[in-house]
Each structure stands twice: as structure tokens, then as C-alpha cells.
Amino acid sequence: MVGLLVVSHSPEAAAGIATIASQMCGGIVPIRGVGGSEEGGLGTSVPLILDALKELFQEAEEILVLPDLGSAVLSARSALEFLGSSAEKVLFADAPILEGAMMAAVEASLGSSLRRVCQVAEEAHLLKKLGEKPQCHS
Amino acid sequence: MDVPGFLKAIYLMAETTVAQKQYLTELDSAIGDADHGINMERGFSKVAAKLQSGSYSDLGDLSKDVAMVLMQSVGGASGPIYGTLFMRMSMKLKGNSEMDLPLFSQAFDAGLQGICDLGKAELGDKTMVDALTPAVEALHEALERGENLASGLDAAVEAVRKGMEETIPMVARKGRASYLGDRSAGHQDPGATSSYYLLSAFRDAAKAEGA
Image 1 (cartoon, rainbow over the protein chains, first blue to last red):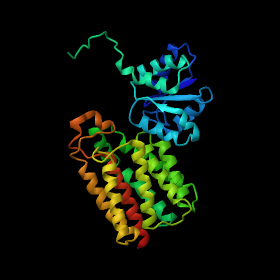
Image 2 (image 1 turned 90 degrees about the horizontal axis):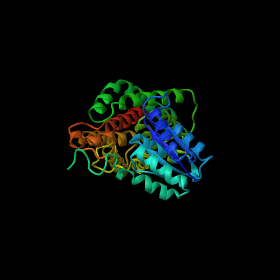
Image 3 (image 1 turned 135 degrees about the horizontal axis):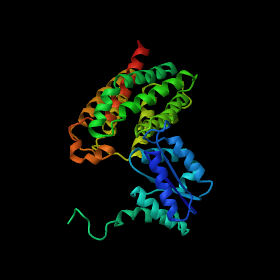
Image 4 (image 1 turned 60 degrees about the vertical axis):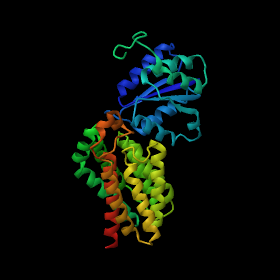
């Protein structure tokens, strides 16, 4: 099964988003959140992300990474360099992090391929949460 | 440049990041998340502490330790970016206890390529790539003129300084600054600035060694 790794600058945001996404699929998809600097402040840390990826690979065959922005992307890409051949079983989703994680969790729970789970996550920006008409754009 | 020379360059960089912490943070508060000075100072002080506790005979091992500590401790994007620079350099430096201009140039080429692979930044995006690319070209030209490491680094520092200043009018297309769009113009890029400090540290260490 595809597992999900939520990477945020904030450890609380990463854990919270992982929990929300997990609830969407009844907890059957392996989902982790990782974030913050080594000292627990806002930021990202390559070793923390690497540890989370390794842990997740104990339960998941492939992993979709959902980064928030900037250094979350760069730190996660750097972590892959230390992952050896398993790095080939990881994709990154260019998606809104919360909506993307939710959609990916549902898709992964259906047993879909990594590529398909990534595709669904990347379509998450199309979700409408206020109905058909946006409030501030005509 | 031998192992003590390389160590001196890193210690000089650590000193510079302490001295310029406030300035880097000011640059980054204009167009980023105001953490570049703090992150660089924390990263390089941890690197200096790590190097002081170790003993090195291979420049590759030394550069690799710099990379690992930066990736671990910086916290912001400069951690993986500078970490990748030193990691790629370490692969070229491995097996050498000294480096001359050809080896440094080769290692630095690989380092810049690593940064480009990681961040996907291109020339004109208002990043450190705009400062480091002219520096790499200056190293190549110095190499063709048959210069030594110290004078090659002199040319590289001049080029990186110009490249850094040329980021001022640019509109950012990468990193946190890109969210500001046109408002990012008129500010010098913080990463380009710390790149200038890094090459200056290597230049000063090379000169001290030659003296």
C-alpha cells in the first residue's frame, strides 16, 4: 500500500494534517507527519525526514510526500539522497497540503498505485469548499 | 589548500555568519521569512564545533561532515542547499589531502550542479545561483590562465560579489521571496549574500596559507 508523509515547517501542523487525513480512511493507510527543526522550532530537518521515511517504509511499499513549501521540498529531496534504491519508490505531490493529504489518503486506501495517488493529490486544488461560486472573484 | 586550510575557511565562515547574522536577517526579513542569519549562524557554529572535535586527513571526509551537520541543524532551505554543495564537493575531494585550483574548481562545479538539481533554480530567479554561476565561470577562466588557488578565488570572489549585487533589481521566481512577486525587486538576495561570504572565507584561508 502507498503511505503518506506530510512534511511541514511546523511539527504541530504536520501531525494535525496527518491525523485529519488518517481519519478520512479509517486509519488503514500508513500516514506520518514530520516537521520542525531539530530543536523543535519552525523549519525542516533532513535527518528527521529521513527517519520518518524509513519508519514509514516498514508499513508502506511506496510513499507519497506532501510538503508545505520551500525548505520542506528541499529537505525532503535531500533526504531521498540518503535513502538508496528506496528513493525510486517515493513521489512528491505539488498539492495543497491538507486537501492533498485527505484526497491521497482516500485514494491510497483503495489500493491505488503511487502514481494514481499522486495524481489525485495534485487535483486537490480543484476542490471547492464554498460551493460553485468563489466569494471574491467574479 | 590542505586540511588545516579547509578547516580555517570553515571557521572563518562561522565567524562571518556570527558577525553578519543581523544583516542577513534584515535582508531576509525584507523578502523572506527572516531566518537566514539565524539559520546560517546556528548551522556553521554547529559545523565548527563538530570539526573541532574531529581529526581529518581527507578533504572529502571533512567536506562530508560539513554537509551532514548543515542538513541536520540549519532548519531552513539553506540547510539542504549548502549541505548539498558540500556533499557534492566531498565526492570530488575524496581521497585528497590537498586541493589546488583545478580540484577546487571541479568540486565547486559539482557543488553548484547539486544546488541546481535540488532547487531547480535558473539564472535570473534571484537566488544564490545568480551569484555562484559567475563565480564558477571566473574559476574556469582563472584555470585557463594557469593561476593558483588563491588568485583563482580572488577572481571568484569578485564575480560572486557582482552576481550578488545583480540580484537587487531581480524579481524572485524561487523560494519564499517569489510569493512577493514584483515587491521582491529592490532587495539583495540573502542566499546570494551568504554565498559571497562563503567564497570570501575560502579566499581568505587560501591567502593566509600562501602567506
